[in-house]
Amino acid sequence: MSKDSLTSPLISVILPTYNGEKYIAETLESVLNQTHKNLEIIITDDCSKDKTVEIIKSYNDARIKLYENENNLGIANNTNKALSLATGEFIMMQDHDDISSPYRAEGMLKVLLENKDLIGLNSRMFYFQTDVSREEIDKNLSVSEPIIDLNEKQLAVGNLFDVNFFHPTIMYRSSILQSLDTPYTPELKVTADSILFARFMGLKAKWYVLKNNYVAYRLHPTNTSKVDINVNYREDIIMIEHLVKATLPFVTKEDIANHIIGRKHDKVLSYIGKTNKWIVDYYKRIIQYNIDNDVLDHEMLLKTLALNLKYFTNLSNVLRPFNSLKVYRSIDELKPYLESNTSVLYDWQKRFFRAINWYFVGDRRLLRTKEISKK
Image (cartoon, rainbow, N blue to C red; front, side, top):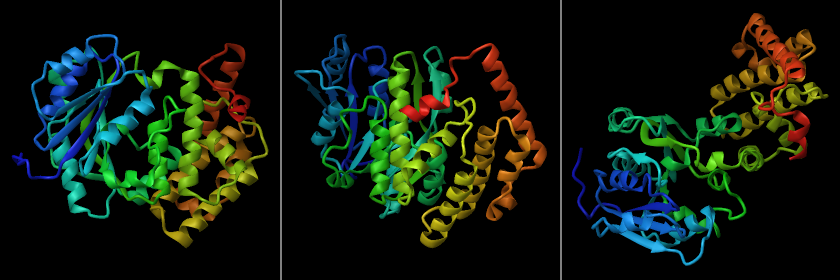
């Protein structure tokens, strides 16, 4: 790996902390050991009640800039404060319980410098439990040259029906923050990061996703996304709405409501409603919009719509298998990408028996569609 001099671009590492004594040392060392050396590590501690600050102060490195809040600001405002203190040309986010590959900053910076119109990018992550050995973590962290997995048109397709944005892995040009008054929305506890990304997309920011696992994401009971399932769920709905609107500006309220149901097909038992005509019309509008505006990777769009059409038609026709097939095969542009009738009916059968099992046995992990409609 290259030996960066201190004349190379300055990267501001944003590291908000709160009660992170268990993991902060390991996290901080992974940042200090980056092959790219020109860093300022902005740490804003949000009134930790443990030894987080004491541990941070034990490190003698001029790149560490620790700020202790007088009052607890909450996740969003604490992160906004850290961003306001950053002076680097590039922003790299770092959660206080995750571990970065030593090549993360250098690899991601390389892509940004080679693509002047690129605003930002994120990498993939290696997920690990707290009892996994450091040897295993290091083995799964990438130290290889960056490999582009998704460009902005492919990412836009993926974000309609899945999550391809991993906040703990992002790096972007700090200049884009000038377009935003408040980067992270204080009212949101869980999805403020994803909605920031949706706002970037609304600004037509060019963004890439890398194949490399440049971050090891620690799974533990106090992960922010696990603290309150109901809050997480409600805010996830808001995030989906923002992403869909940023990608498809023509969407209506009905489109958003039904799109959310279709996107959450794995959590919804069944949906009996007059949505067959809607889904066909909606997907045709998406296809035509992209033909006219060329904002999505078209082949990936068709493949993705074909897959999700199967999910949605089975969801909407859980008691009518052949009606499901009829709807599934009603969009000409998608026919080259459709699965066989056998595959569709097999998926319908699985959903049908899942519904029967839920009705007689009960499974509170599954969400009723009417609950989705109320959120």
